[in-house]
Image 1 (cartoon, helix red, strand yellow):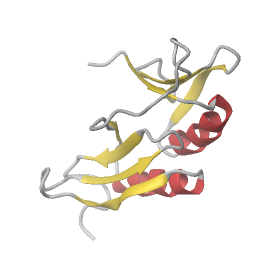
Image 2 (cartoon, one colour):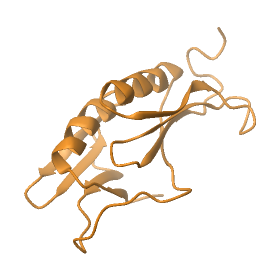
Image 3 (spheres, helix red, strand yellow):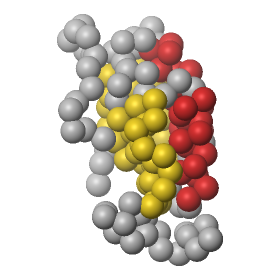
Image 4 (cartoon, helix red, strand yellow):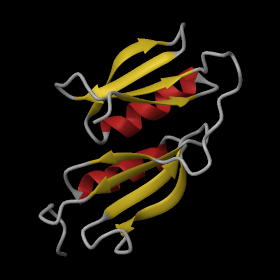
Length: 136
């Protein structure tokens, strides 16, 4: 459904350090690293899309996060949600909601929320009712 999602950064080197660690935890790799131009592009291992891009704003202004905007990464099991959250905190992210069920969304929803160093809100979620770790 999506071609790409882009979030802004004010420090491309800091963003690279953060996202390399966090997105590797869920199987995404940096396909394009053009820090001179101010672009990073991550894709699923062995795939070409959809793309998650981090960039300095093209208009030269300051990157800001959107109020009410959350980028959600869908993963195959709850362990990946836990690993994503741990990696984000270790890489300098801020906790916005520890891994756990969110039954107000639906009975199988297991997610975690963080903010990256620029304030962008990220979610990692497993929606699968048959996912490993669903029943303790």
